[in-house]
Length: 444
Image 1 (spheres, helix red, strand yellow):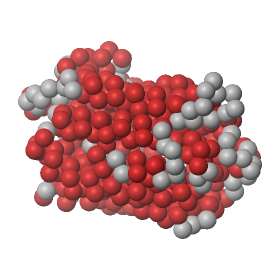
Image 2 (cartoon, rainbow, N blue to C red):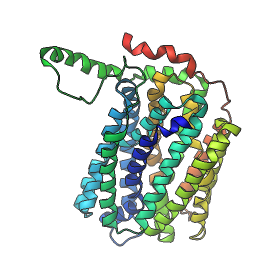
Image 3 (cartoon, rainbow, N blue to C red):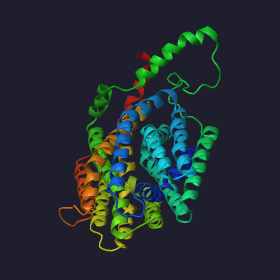
Image 4 (cartoon, helix red, strand yellow):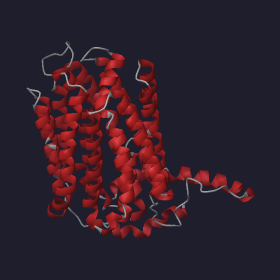
């Protein structure tokens, strides 16, 4: 774990950023309901508008993630991390100022515009940064620790929300987001694969005269060339059966996860009248169990069982906990289901580790970006499928009484991902065979 100590500034940056992002999650449902449907526990408009927002963000992320990952291979991880970490501040600042209907709509629009670039990109770039600095044999454990840092931030953020007012929650979140941007720019060293490939995307000084003016069009052309084409992405997916199987599992599991997150809080509010405090309690339980699992269990289990088996274990428990949510018959059942995060948190780090071993060092950003892009496409499809279903079965127009029907469907989708994961077979990592390809961009 010697090299992991060199990643401490990345871990701190990720903790601060995730703390700011996660602490508003328990409060945003109440803010949305208060702005759109004051005094009500069920609001189809809020469900539809949240689903539409998630779908548009997912569409933008689907386009941006491969580009972001590929640009980071060219210009360095730190330069690309600066953009989403900074953009995250602005929507939070709006609700920190006011949460009236007009300010909510301003937040809603700005959130869509910024999240199309921000959502998933910080995690994607962090994974590529870790892959740059950790050998293949330890990546599953390192990715687990990275996810554990995120879970720790999730616990701390949601726990702090439990003791803050709604206004204070957004104010503290804004301050933490600003702190993460400053910390990252001051302390985080860049991670560069090859000096010949790395061109600063954020200028350290002014350019010199006419020579640099002549180079400007060439630099702009290089940025456009950096965007991977559909043929490039398909070629990478076809380069390894394991890679393509992991991509399928990633899509289906993200389809289920996004469907659950889009529906669960509205379902619990309508079914058991949960509010910000109960949401925070539920998320703290999930986060504590996930943190313990990723920081303590996963570094032990990943080498012993292998990422492929651990992925299947995670997806099985993911499906089980969604089904438990859907049939909850009392207010305590969601709290019991949240304990399943002790095991279902294995799935995402395992997928990322499997993928990282199928590409060379100069393709880590592109590969992680493609997987993030596939997950973002699930962000488009999932709200379009599950938000109308949630709104229907929480309303009086439901064809039969089953408030958790949409979440049951989400659980079945997760079970499909579990079955697909059983088909992934462990093969020797091939990334070490591709080191020589790192100079391919120079010949473009």
